[in-house]
Amino acid sequence: MTLDPQRRELYERALRLGEEALRDGRFDEAERHFRSAGQIQDTPEVRQWIARTAYERHMAEGKAAMEDREWKQAERAFEAAARHAEHVEDPETAREAAHYYRLLAAGRSALDRGELERAIEALKRAVGYRPDDEANHDLVIALWRAGQQAEQRGDLQTALGYYRQLLGYQKDHLEAQVRLRRIRQRILVRRLTVVATVGAVFLFICAWTNNFIRWPVAACNAGAVGSLLCTPTPTPTPTFT
Image 1 (cartoon, rainbow, N blue to C red):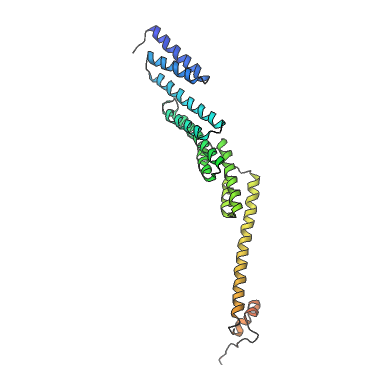
Image 2 (cartoon, rainbow, N blue to C red; image 1 turned 120 degrees about the vertical axis):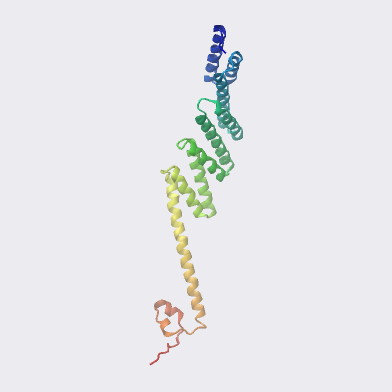
């Protein structure tokens, strides 16, 4: 429908005022102006501006909630923003931004509660959207704490895994590099201790059974092990001529 000049001027003025209000973050006022334009003429342009206003309102609410550490409220706001992203000018970018901040809020919420696995899972997904953003910093913190907790439990292999992951996100993390080296040394010492213990038990069993077995001369001549195995009077190995 073609508007007469007067109504066209009112329509364009309402859009202009709505854009100005939206740039200043006055969302209620912006929506009022856009809806006024829609009453004059309902166009795709008007609907897009209304959707954009709703999107930016929810994004602003979510970020404000995050500053107050109201994580659940932030998550709900970003979920609402994602629903409106379909109708904005660049829906894919808008949707990714909403998902990123929702995951960031979820990760920080879990981190605050000490639920490190949940935090790591959410923050890894957030990093997938923005690899070099603040989620990467929070993920490094979560992996560091998880590694420390695993060490305190004595679960060195799990701790090793967390520190390796951490260094994948921040290669110059000196503390993680130090912990990684120390854990590898401790794991090596554990393995050597197990081998030595098993060997000692084996020799003890052999020495104990020596009271009941008369070892042949060939076994007694087998160096240090032979001297441990054999009785003072070993049984001669029979020979045939």
